[in-house]
Image 1 (cartoon, protein in one colour):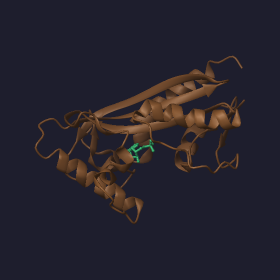
Image 2 (cartoon, rainbow, N blue to C red):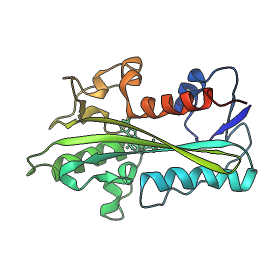
Image 3 (cartoon, rainbow, N blue to C red):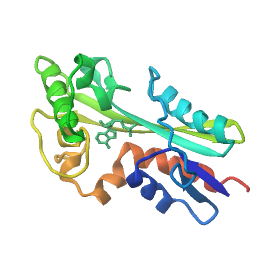
Image 4 (cartoon, helix red, strand yellow):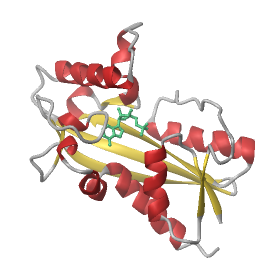
Length: 202
Ligand code: IMP
């Protein structure tokens, strides 16, 4: 069965392709020559995942799934959440030259916002929207942890250098990819998706 992963991120594509059995032929947007910039402007992580999956389903009529992730910080009313990728940009018309600059500014803002807060509790949350024949199923993956007050480690991306998962004393950025992938929010949500797909009688 052919299934489209609505992503432009080759790393994510490879990760899930490795998890899926022979029953599924995973296609990327690139494989379909689909180059639209898919809007990610919904107010919640769930709605963003749903909107991305249906954006493709409604145009191409293909079975597909899309994911969306956010960092939810307890003392900040679960912000940056759906705005995680552009947290620093929300403050005004700042122009960042590179993704690294955006990431650095996002982390600086997060640490500043937490300066006078007692709780450092946070969680990463991934939601996947799967659309098969127009019917949607949602899968969630959560990893709880805390935001430390310094930047540690060079692996990973995004907020990894300030996030320490519960039960560990290293940040996600101090773990290699295999180790992070065993426990991460995205891995948990993807495993639920794969389990669901594998039990379908196709
Ligand atoms: P996306 O929905 O996977 O594109 O994630 C949105 C944003 O959340 C990213 O741009 C990152 O800022 C943040 N994020 C998502 N997953 C991770 C992760 O595993 N580590 C650190 N930051 C992440």
